Length: 188
Image 1 (cartoon, helix red, strand yellow):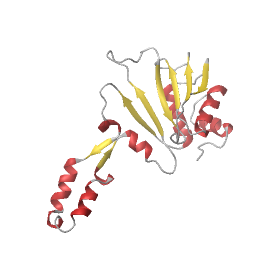
Image 2 (cartoon, one colour):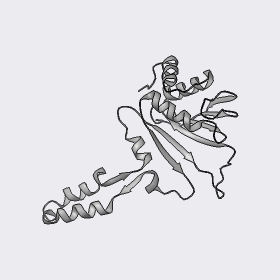
Image 3 (cartoon, one colour):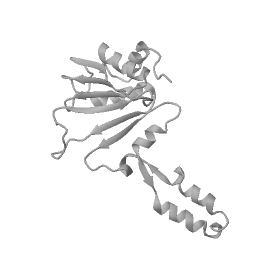
Image 4 (cartoon, one colour):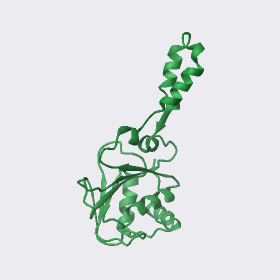
């Protein structure tokens, strides 16, 4: 599934989203979507990485799922977890059927009906149009992430079937506008 039919279509939709984009970044975003590869955008804080993710989502007619990554993040925060209180309530309401329908009840308890989805699982479950998954590493004094150079991983146009990331780094970007200057792109 290709989210954008052409570079011109992507450019027009980004313009409609009030996002001005240079030709190099346009090409990188278009190719990442076309190849169904994630786009890793690196640059200093405030240079427009997150704004790019929201503009691409608006242009694609989809939503952004934000995954805040920090030291100590758990699977529960990223993927989700079972709502034990809801499972317990379900068991209490089904108490009279436990002996006769236990297999059905047990399988129902472990279904997505009782699962509180985290941003990663929500992003994977989009069917008709893939969402934009914005992975944000938060820099802390205990983190190995440099506060001068941060990155955002943007998954648009589907999640990669195989490895590989389209990488784009910006050395100088005006806040809230576009990736205007020195952008180097390569497929890793």
